[in-house]
Length: 105
Image 1 (cartoon, one colour):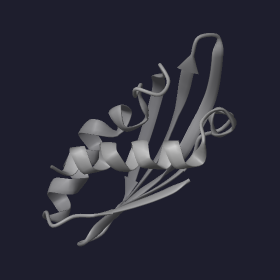
Image 2 (cartoon, helix red, strand yellow; image 1 turned 30 degrees about the horizontal axis):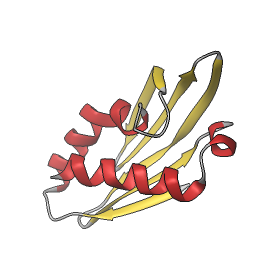
Image 3 (cartoon, one colour; image 1 turned 180 degrees about the vertical axis):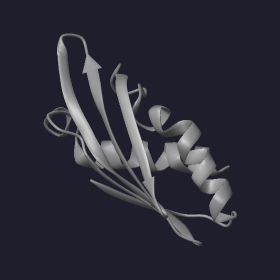
């Protein structure tokens, strides 16, 4: 799944906001009660690689991907593991996009 959102903030401010809020981007939304554990992240220049485990009841799945911050936008590429089969793609994309917009507000 890929989500790109434009911004008009300084790149370093956006990177700090991503660092602070990456757990919240994939955590519970109104759609499913998902808990994020074992978050790992590593910045290489303007790109953060991340991985975590998403838990919902007795189910758990690895989530991994990247967040790229440019002067004009933020792009999240994420592999939601088995949750991609449980959540319609359009719903997951719109939820993530909404959370990114909230992060940048």
